[in-house]
Image (tube, rainbow, N blue to C red):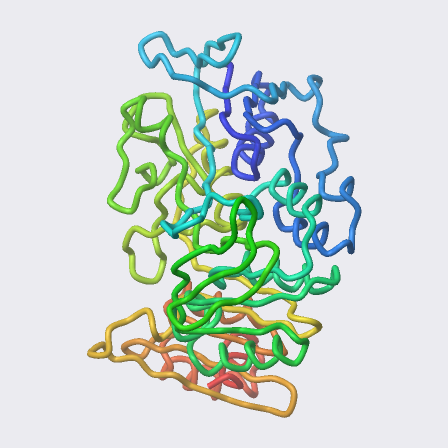
Length: 412
């Protein structure tokens, strides 16, 4: 059996690694020039904490002897579904099974002057190479998602002045509610990073090169700007092939990661996921989800049945030595009319917030201490209710059968 994987990110490589264990011939086709690297390591390369070579994942076990072949720097132009063939620049490949793992791309907002020299996105190794090669002293980060925050911290460590401009009322708005976000903002300001919230960028100043940023209320001088305004699935190839694209813009698959076209699977950031809390479709453009979906696609490609259960969002970052993390949903993600309860506990050096909806834990946010984040994640998967946790914890204090509920009780 010949399996072709389009995309050399973590999802495609996870699928290839699984399938390679079952004596399949696998070819990975990627338009990137580079072999597999860790997107999670890019901020450390940007800060200078690691060298470029340490971004790449070990390729010792990746060779033609494993049945995995790689074709780099080739963009797939089209897929011939009838003849089960992938056509790329200068060649083609027949496939028995095809896996689409084309990932996501940065969203570039419509801002006057956005095409000036000195405006960057941050998604790939090539993006980081360009940022490092550019002359810069003061950098504005437009938006404040996790990628932007990590980039800002990295650039500060690398000697730049950094300013965040966020449209919403708090930093990291998709991951944190107002109180923990304000603590994160304070930590950044303590390290001389300015954070401006509730400000809209209306113009990039300068002639050919960036000289500043204009918001609705002020002008800020800078040498460069990085866009942290979100990601969207890369689905142009999938759409042109006839694959179903969902309302959120990702490829639609079933629980086996199979698309609406026979023998074609999809996984990773290009796919619409299932939110394990709400059961609704969502875009979970995160590394752990890509690994999970890639593995499931790999198993199902070779005929071993696996089901994708959905995903609970888990993200974290080290902010100058203070670890912060978010799991599941924030309270702000729901309408005011819905029954949301926030359980807050603050200590000397750490704090946490547990988000509860209709009596069940649906999310949590941590500042300063994140070691039990996995326990909260389990509780979300189990749809654990507050009453059940307290009742079971009381019974188990003497029995010590299962530490899950007694650990959870400490957070409530």
